[in-house]
Image 1 (cartoon, helix red, strand yellow):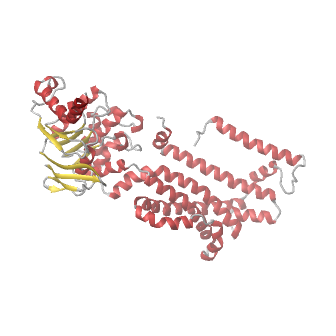
Image 2 (cartoon, rainbow over the protein chains, first blue to last red; image 1 turned 120 degrees about the horizontal axis):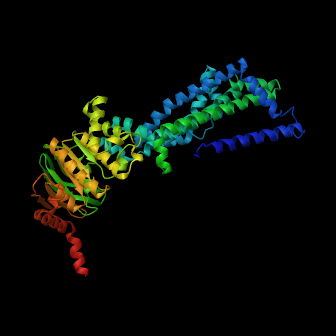
Length: 260
Length: 257
């Protein structure tokens, strides 16, 4: 992970601005048909309007709610499961084939099944997101736990601490940076899956539903503006989690980077 | 208080230690010296109940050691891996004190006192990765001392500090342990140190390690870094231990010369 300095931020902003300018120019010179692909400035203006549009905000709220609970449920399930599988080698060996079978199944393919299983559309969206988001958290937790220095565990054991205390006081904190990385990946995956489930399955409420509605009304500008908000939300969540990781796990980054 | 009876351990077909017999009395400071790879760390881990020896018995106060005994602390050779990088020096030292049922305040007071003893009071808030190797080693010694174990096991505890600090720490450990009646089993490859620190020096052979010498150290206490080391008895004993440790090497050298 590269350090976030003033100049890297500046370059990122320059890149985005450059793309917007090119798109704007392409639209204005007639290179792109603005009935199919609206001007960048139009989309930006629409995005600004959506920020204060109660209808869009209600949809966005529903999506964020589904995303948040999906991520919370993922952490609540995958972290304990990963701890268990990381500590108990035989259990991990027994479960591995199942994990390797389930993991490559695209969550999107499970949406029809989820629709049948869950009456509540919120639960349906969450279930699909949890399914996809579980894997990065589970796998990272298992590897984080396995990466714990045996001497660190022995040290606590030598002071007479039992296995539960060793897991709580050594294994968990030691694996925490890996778990946090898994959660960050899961946060992005969950956003994708919640919106996908909304777009594919429809229903009421949700950014995906808003995008569908805008599409059937031929409001490409609104579609793109809503999509841009989803992307911005993803960037904000990622930045927030990266910041938290840097603060909490300074000891880890210092060691892995080899500087003090 | 500690008794090893025919203690043996093999890793697969590799025999690390072979029928080690050793008795350590309450309050005694016993140094174990031996060439590298004589199974010193295996010996220590067996006593601490961290590994299950494949043969023989470890008795602590007459009872066989099955899991890690209470009132035991270990200072590992690899101090940097033994300290927790997510905890400050103070938190590292106070963590094991949870086993003593002390409240947070009492734990921190005891940890601070131990850090002060090893000369790290000012660095209590620092993290291990902000410290030099010698400082980290002193934190791990402070952690063991704060725990006030009845048996203290030390594996090359003064390995990576400068000579001056090393002498200070040797004296400090002796002083604190004598004051609290701790029994020490100290593993070292340093012959000089074993004679200076120990009430007894036990010499292990090359792997598979077994006891080839058990010498009482008849030197007046309390020890003094300058005066003790210039005593004739110290010099004689050091030479004797040295010959035992390097015995085979010397013969070998003579043959090839």
